[in-house]
Length: 187
Image 1: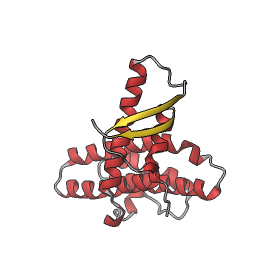
Image 2 (image 1 turned 135 degrees about the vertical axis):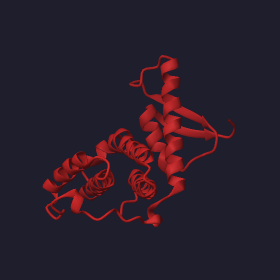
Image 3 (image 1 turned 120 degrees about the vertical axis):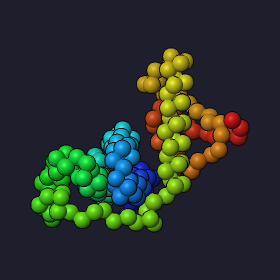
């Protein structure tokens, strides 16, 4: 129910993973399964959780709950997807979540396979967030190359290329530590 771009992206990513893991397991392709799971886990830990850290401590209880519920949903779904490949780790995740939510069944191995909802998948959001991460990576490289500390706030960053939605701009600004983000046409 959250409209926050990070929540929408993470839900899209997890439903994309459900689709890919289901297909790869049906084809007995455990290598693709583990690659998809590793990517989701990496996206969750290195981008979603890190970028949502302030939201988990947010004063607005509703916003905080949306972030926590999204993370719990993602972790529970990842545990279900991992269960055929890494049963003990999946069970450990499930039991940790079960301490906070007693409504969960006794074991992850008694859970139903996650249902795919294609309405929650968005290639557009997934691609735009990939672009944001690329922009941030290049911005951090440029700062490092110019020997400008990340602690030093810069006035503006101009990004050459196709403009992405304004809801992503605060993520870029915070990651690169700039006051203003602007796009200019060109490459």
